[in-house]
Amino acid sequence: MADSRAHDCLNQHGRLITQRQEFERVWQDIEDRINPTDVQFTEKSSQRNKGVQRTEKVFDATPGLALDRFKAAIHSLVTPRNQTWHKLKTVDEDLAEDSEVTRYLEEVTRRLFAARYAANFDTEVQGCYYTSGKFGSMGMFVGERPGQSLYYRAVPMKQLYFAENEFGVVDMVHRDWMWTARAAYQKWGDKLPAVIRNAAKKFPDQEFRFLHVVKPSNEVDVNRRDYRGMQFASLYICFETRDVIDVGGFRSFPYPVGRYDLNPGEVYGRSPCMTILPDVKMLNEMNRTTIQAAQLGLLPPMLAHRDGILDAMRLTPGAINYGGVDDNGRQMVVPMKLGENVQIGLEMMDQKRAVINDALLSTLFQILVDKPNITATEAMLRAQEKGQLIGPTGARIESEFLSTMLTREIDIMAAAGQLPEMPEKLRERGGLYEVEYDSPLSRAREAEGGVAILRTFEQLAPIASVAGPVAYKRFNIDAVSKELARLNGMPAKLMFSDEEMEEIDADAAQQAQVAQILEAAPVAASAAKDIAQASAIAGSDTGEMLPGVVPQ
Image (cartoon, rainbow, N blue to C red; front, side, top):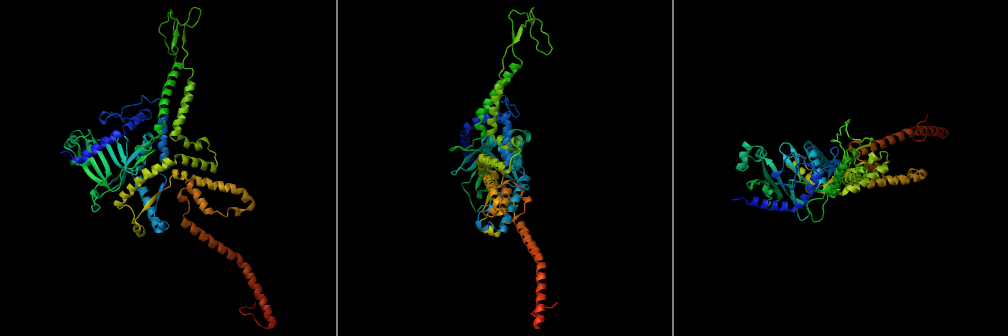
């Protein structure tokens, strides 16, 4: 008897496939015209031919190159490898200034980054950003590798199906993929159906189709420590036999899903490539037509007299064509004038390329290329503009994709005992935390504050030239410099911490006090001498000595 769980999951998977068919048609157009691969959304998995060159619809590389730059731009703005692009802080305001809690959260952040970049996060997340720019949605599996902590796998859109809950949060994922019998046997061994076990021995490279379903568990037993007590159920199903191969669970959702932009009422995201698809198609057609026009201009058809005796034309360099002129020396064959307006085609293509580069954010990163000598205020204004333009995109990536990933990472590392002991104060308050993003993009979104600081000081400069430093007495200069350094991405290791600044200020105050004492010492000594002499004179007149004064 067939497993009812597999039957229910496969029926649901069929509905998910139907729901995204219209998206797949658009994705296939994008795939064919921007950066063709062997991924085919409109073909069944069994019909695909790996490694097939599919460039017959591509006549211009601009969209593909712009998409590569888009991936690099989002990666460097949101999750740069060389920066700590997020921090953890407590939700409880009473503990925000507690040094023990602060040090704990800083150590958790440090270990997260160490584990993340010791694994393959950097390479896999770039694939996610590429997929997001291309198709509008992206997904990644965050798993636990025994003995090596975290590992990541970018999930291609060909394999990824998902659904939302009532709050618009993705909480169910179906991953539909092909796997060799060898790889499947390495994971599940004798749990596999007999047909796949036999193939693993005789034909290990033969592929089979599998389905991984992760969804909220309907029967959570909080008293159980196994998968039955976990929030999310996990089922692996074999399509060939319609059997459930493995059942498990996850404490936290293992598939962070992000969407570049989202239309109301839709589940799958919209991408910049969807927006520029008409321009991409037009650019390819323009390029093809311009190439044909250029060929006609460089190698035009020949016009010959009908009654001429000219043999077949030889068009190789230095060739001699007998009969090409008449007895009077007039040319018997003339080129047909075509392709004279190639320049118009080139100008129109440049316009389309500009639109494509703009949609894929390439124009936002030409500040230093186009105008290298700019003032600090102008650079801050450019950063502000950049943050305003791509801020919504970054905010969606942070709140939807990265937040789910962080929750999963912390859950895995905590279960593996790879995080420090939580302070008792924080444990008593429930151990709640929140993420504060400190990426170049988040700082660009806050660049307005830096612009306000610079403008204020620029406008106060004429007043200060008349009134003096008193014009700036309203400002905490140390706090101003710290905020500007943060907004400009100054590395924290190059700045003194608050504790170090307190020590520096205390040392400076002590040195100033010592200097004041030393400066006052000669005056005090001279005054004491004068007093002593006056006392001695007064004592000699009356025959009495002032109390506590020793005569010289």
